[in-house]
Image: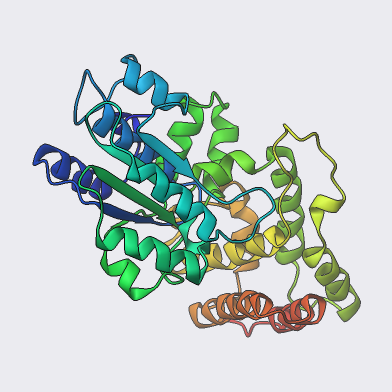
Length: 344
């Protein structure tokens, strides 16, 4: 993919295009942002722009350099990431990259290295990488791709130009799903609304499962006020269950919703409830097709209560990230949400 083909990320692309136009490309970049939003595609597009023989600063898809880069066989291009089954990247991978950079460019130009998921580099690997960045070869461009820079050392961060990537707008995700992935408009719209601005996440969702799970959440949350403990307990059990264990799909099929996705539907419901109370029905996006149920559920809810409910759900999800007992935490959440709101 070339830079002209990348949707969104105007500020990130502007930084890179300006550097290319002025021949002031940094020796090292750090691309950060959520998974699946285009960091890797942008890094590869930068490699095309640097290595292309026919259209320097832009890249093409037809010259020998770009064709070999797309095939992963360009002699001056190196891509690495986590090894299969590994939860971290060690010093051996950095040493392999170091050996690659020690060689002169085969085609008398730049050498480009892309290191994916750099946030899982071990401390030892980061130290080795830092030594490379302190004295980089004059022809080397290194791009680190990471979810964030929080796990990287300050000296390493100081040697990189930081380029941030934000989640894509829903409209951009929907457009890409329709135009580039051939999805039907309704399916693309649904997946885009639950993509968190990530094309990768959108494509990993199974539409039929998404519809089924979300509808059940709507049905329960519409009547949660005043529900009995036994009803809430069963709902808690369902919300924290692993949907993937129930659904078996072929390896080449989109995955079912991952564990925890049902709670994200709950969070989205209360976000939409607050949006509706503050700004009206036009502010509802993810539950627009369930607007009548949302309106009915918020009939006796004021803004203060809606904000409180949203906070309860958010705090519960934060608690689960700290390894709390899922069933008990979600039961407590539902008991708070089920308290009957005072009449407005």
